[in-house]
Length: 177
Image (cartoon, rainbow, N blue to C red):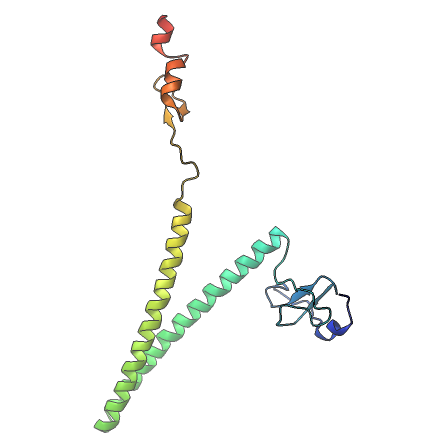
């Protein structure tokens, strides 16, 4: 597995404003080059291409970038749907002034389009709700399964409170003895 020089044809220039991995470039460790290639394997040496950074700092940057892009695409699609609904509503008003048979056909088409867009919206809302539920369940998991309680005498927290209270230095019963 050595570099045969084929990878030079697919050499990628460094993008301005975004990272290499975020823009879809991949790195071959054998050829030591970033390439613009859709496959998982290097066209030159056949070695597996890296699609994600190895450094934690850059991994976090890429993850944040991908999430921001996903949110942006989602907001664009929602605004496009709203625009389509407005256009359909305007089209429905124009259709009423024409003949009855044409209006019936167009209103049926508009109804089916509206139903499709409503279904798409509900599916997106469900996926958003599922994501938030997953995030909440991950956040709500307790870190320690054992609960701690405060000592009546010294006000320090302990898992096995009964054992501590018997030996507590500020316990008035032990002080009298």
